[in-house]
Image (cartoon, rainbow, N blue to C red; front, side, top):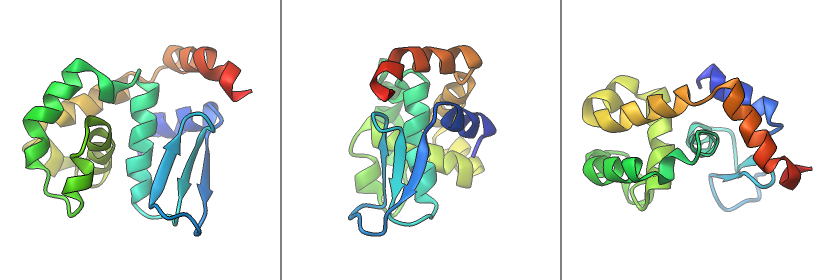
Length: 141
């Protein structure tokens, strides 16, 4: 995973919880500052994708990304295509996973999505982290 994401995750006090009793692979929860995983596997990259979208100003919810999602979601070839193409948020998160694990494939098959993930990564600055802390700090403390 990109070091900027990991550094922001730690700086903002997010935690990774492994709970074998849950009935899902993973779950990102900004309110509790956590990712809960049934087990540690590459699904953690998907959940970190939700974190990236969150700290990049809800990058998965912008009109621009909605257009990218509509244009490129048909090019997803993952086994869980129905799940990851159900909405732009899941698509973005899975695309971050693809960015980490299948970078060249993502770049060639979904170039606009690839650029959107890069753009989100470039939004991670000290100023952006401070902004997130200022906005959400009251909820977290």
